Image (cartoon, rainbow, N blue to C red; front, side):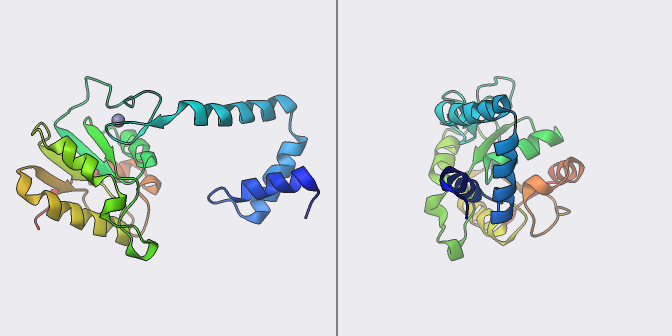
Amino acid sequence: MYEGVVQDLIDELGRLPGVGPKSAQRIAFHLLTADPADVTRLSEVLAEVKAKVRFCERCGNVAQAELCRICADPRRDQTAICVIEEPKDVVAVERTREFRGTYHVLGGAISPMDGIGPDDLRITELMTRLADGTVTEVIIATDPNIQGEATATFLSRLLKDMGIRITRLASGLPVGGDLEYADEITLGRAFEGRRVVNV
Ligand code: ZN
């Protein structure tokens, strides 16, 4: 235990995902000895990100305006939607350069053990986007793990009678993993080899 504000800093850092007590302590001491200008820049960007960044009203991706950069881009193919779990997955798929459509961020995956059901995800918003018939393909790119598979199955069943081509990324992605950890070649191939879901 350290005194006052140093311990407060360690506690706050320790609340971040993936930062254990030891890392929190290491980061805290790094900051204590860092150049004041570097620390100021970090604190400014933290404040700025909370003040300026929000979520796209259409797809749920991070955005700096009502619509994210991708939804606002008229060159993106409006007939295809790639459904992913988190905004970070947008980055992973964009890196492959295989997809020119738009995205829909669910905000997680179905996980009964964590008390997350379909109603907790942005599925109603997805159905609203599909209602006018513009979209002809939905690519389900949830993570290749149990929760991602459960979510993909749920969505496939929900969408099956809408006359939309429903596809799922090809196998070859590391099972049990997270989409963001797949390298862009593997993810790109999985995208290219996506198959139509039959339920
Ligand atoms: Zn968007």
